[in-house]
Image (cartoon, rainbow, N blue to C red; front, side, top):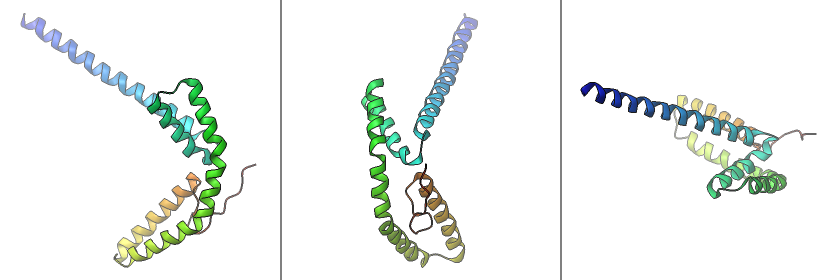
Length: 144
């Protein structure tokens, strides 16, 4: 009787572990598929694609609705790029002011780390198509 209880308990543990493993694999596959979908195409489409993905998930959109929502975001992507580009000089000015005010509070080692972080953030902004690579206006060649 004790042996049977141990076997049942062991089977329950094995089923649980397999369920966790399977669920993790499925989640990773879904995340990889979503990331691939978001990163497909020019960088200026990425933000709209992230929003499209979030809406599809939260609103439980049908396949047709997802396709239409994605097309709508893609259609308006250039408008967002233009708006960001027009606002970038002001955003760069504010970023520079913030950097100057914070730098006064820091020691030399902290200022060096801040400079490294700023470069990292500028690179991230540039990759996202937001601009202001090094605190100045964005210089990007248009895609053909």
